[in-house]
Amino acid sequence: MRRLATPAQAGLLHLIGGTPMAWIPAGDAGVGYRAKLESAGIGGMKARAAISLLSGAVARGELAPGAPVVESTSGTLGMGLALAARALGHPVVLVVDDELEPDMRALFTAYGVRLEVVERPHAVGGWQRARLDRLTEVLAATPGAYWPDQYDNPDNAAGYAAMAQEIIDQVETVDVLVATVGSGGHCAGLTRVLRQRWPGLRVIGVDSVGSRIFGQPARHRVMRGLGSSILPRNVVYSDYDEVHWVGPVEAVASCRAVAARSCVAGGWSTGAAALVAGWAARREPGAHVVTVFPDGPHRYLRTIYDDEWCVARGLLGVAATDPVEIAAPDAVEVEGWARCGVVRDPAGAGAPV
Image (cartoon, rainbow, N blue to C red; front, side):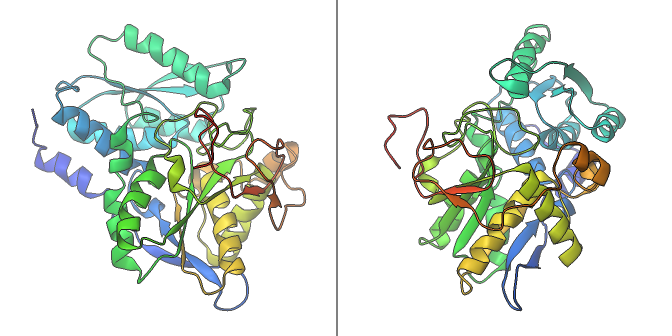
């Protein structure tokens, strides 16, 4: 049964989306790409997914009035869920890990979100698996709770249809879409709509070094918000023409370079997207390249933009200026920026898609 939002709730929902597109220079005069600045919408990019996840559950009768919403997050989806759940009248419990920044913890507390903090990573699945294990316990102890399951819920991708339409309205054409990949939702949602408008659209996926998504082995990742130690089923492998893996040294350098060049800044996903979008724009100067900057810089002022923090982790080294080419996703374990033109589902039969 559908529940209508009150005027106050509708006002909150109205703040999601409608973000601008910015030109980001990436080399010589006239060379660059366009970036959707999701930090200009309240809740960041994943607020779009959050409202879709909860609205879909309400429409199907899976989310009862006033029932708690419980989800695992490294931070960004949590912000979106806090907003969406408040608008729809639900309390939120977020399962986070011990590496969540103090500023984010304080903000969640201010928003009235209950945090369940995992203190140790899983031996194999890292923080992500440990959070999901705790989530199972929280669900069992919370009668009536609803888990959106951002990793395996088609409502995630559906939440980005409006963003795709905004892009269509903001640019004349798109030749290349560069999309960071975590849960897989925003790339799947954008590609589905944008390829209806531009069938020849090429899609470049951007993953993190140490992520399993595209066939590399999982290991500890400094970067948050992209990559995964599990295989999210929202990832549509057939959407991608190639994949890049980006390391934290490259992401830090990219974040800082974009900020210095354009006064537009963001976090790990923004730096990774900017690195690959700039490479694509320089490689094909006439191509119209578009990417998405998922959030702004404020969460990262004590990490990415803090010299002391970066030096302590060896993140101010020499960053690669071009990716290493590998023949297959599992041909070699990559340590930094790498690229592969073969994309396949690691859980499938192994044939390229």
